[in-house]
Length: 181
Image (cartoon, rainbow, N blue to C red):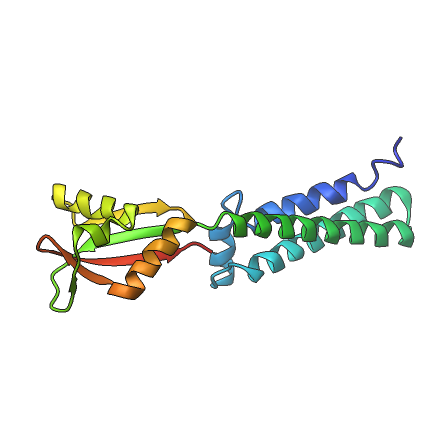
């Protein structure tokens, strides 16, 4: 029974390394402060592997103290740890890519160069229409919303045709799409 579970601590510490490296527990601020560098994307993976290496060395040391040196076990443990992080990394980015987030920001501004658009044109993009209606009906100067990737494509197509500065009912707005990593 013990033979079956010998690799479990290595898998668990690899999972923990992944979670810390990808800021699941809010460790990013501490790591960025220590490194004086922004970590994102591939840097998160490198941090995860670095942490995995540290945990691997600690666990290996504890194993050697208890059971003696076994190069076969230690090499298998290293491969299992690396595979665990790699699989988690691939799953994380696969899920992230299929769930891409788009944020719409519409800001009321004073501008000289803009394109007047009609109600029918704005209604081509329901989220943009909702934002303009919100700004017209309130005293707010800015509207933020998370929108679907499909709606983001529609708004982007609208903006490519008409520009990012539009005017509707005497109100000039700047429209910005922000894509999450």
